[in-house]
Image 1: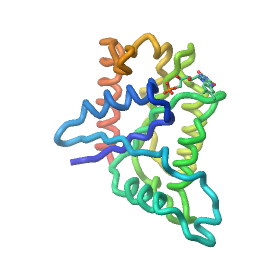
Image 2: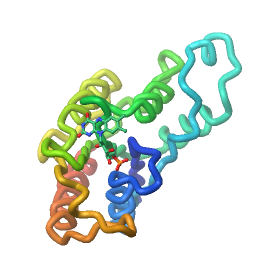
Image 3: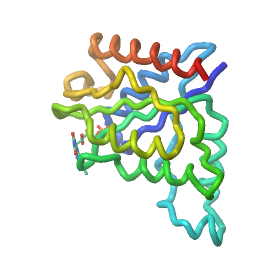
Image 4: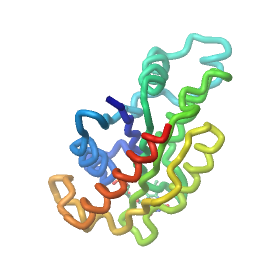
Length: 182
Ligand SMILES: Cc1cc2nc3c(=O)[nH]c(=O)nc-3n(C[C@H](O)[C@H](O)[C@H](O)COP(=O)(O)O)c2cc1C
């Protein structure tokens, strides 16, 4: 069985990107299982934690939980045309101490979403830039920029849009094929 970690770039209770993440967890099978990895409890990265110590226990737990994954899926909104700080912080924590980058070599993919017109394109591509440096082997096609996401999620914070569900399921087929190549 392969385990894929999902990292969500929003801490908001009624978050659209969390709704997408929950839908994807529901698409897990016996051979390909998705789980959401919590990044909200990680203290802001300070290099002294690793150079002088001690590092927070949550760093060690997070690094171990990423290390054991077979793939990584990032689902993120856009904050000011870039990656929300909580997600960038998680990337930074996992990348250190120097020489112990737990992201390295993992197959990955990005889904970005926004209530606006351009589907968080800016966040998607800023994230992609960091993933190049972190040596995450990121799926290139299909790209997933989910625009007008507020139209697809109900007041119960669940997706109620068959077209979006179908789009996501097709994206996941491509992602599984990508992960299975490694
Ligand atoms: C600090 C901040 C900056 C934002 N900047 C952008 C932006 O650059 N582009 C965009 O499409 N939406 C932007 N938004 C709106 C978010 O897309 C919207 O709040 C969305 O619901 C956040 O995702 P979530 O529902 O998963 O929490 C911003 C929201 C916040 C709080």
